[in-house]
Length: 373
Image (cartoon, rainbow, N blue to C red):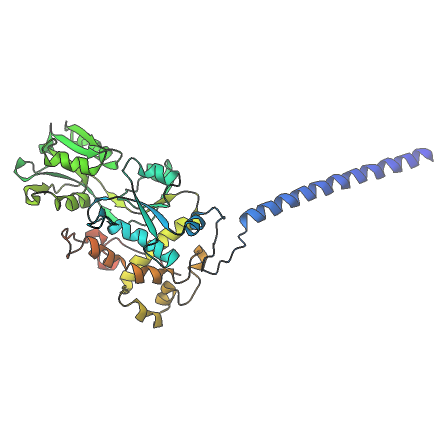
């Protein structure tokens, strides 16, 4: 009888220990789950004005809002794209896409600080958080998209690398540059493309590198190098500033493909989405015929595509932590893609750059926005 009592007592104690252990495990798991929910669940207002969508309190959007302005990594040496005007202000095609982001967030395109960066400095500044977004004639490549930990937004300018020489040099093709001294800016895809193309053609040449484009162009003008290479858009913009533009020519050959556009750090999907869809808004507005001058008229449109774009209906902005009328703000303050292009590069500027591949897809170009839906 005693043996049976002891057995029952042992079983009872064993069951008690099992339940006690299970209870402790359950409590620990519950606590861990609550911690994760606290980290991942955003309790702030996501209705648009000032709310954050998916993203923690340390997100780029939150940091930009707290600071009160956007920090754009840009160029101040490339006329038409990023340059200092007579008043000492940095302006240009690339800068306007930064202003578009500022307009979407703050309803103020001037809520922006443009930080001039060299080609060597730009990615370090982005990776370390010194800047919020890089929009500086930067080419989208595999290495930059993976090894450097960056994400590229929509291509805003389709370009190709070219070569400038003096008109009286007798040089009409890349083959004619055998043995030539060719100037190139260090820290760019231009260096690699030059080496690749001349290696493929079996041409020997002397590469001369420079830390920035101003020094490179100065050396070319004074005759220290026989030719210089960069994106064709850069050649066109700098040619207009040379002492005698007609004394120089750009060879017809293209050395590469150069898709240029905004770049952000990896790891912040909310910010990546904001940069993408602000840029797409400028494409979509041009396709729909909406400009900074007539955008208010479209607020009364019954077209559901237009109503969603302008935030009259739907919650597209709130999904990213922006006001629902973020695209309206962009168009009203900065304009559609065509307005931005014409303002800095178009027929009324000294560059008179043809749109070419940078036309909207409806006009035979490559610019195409996914649906605002």
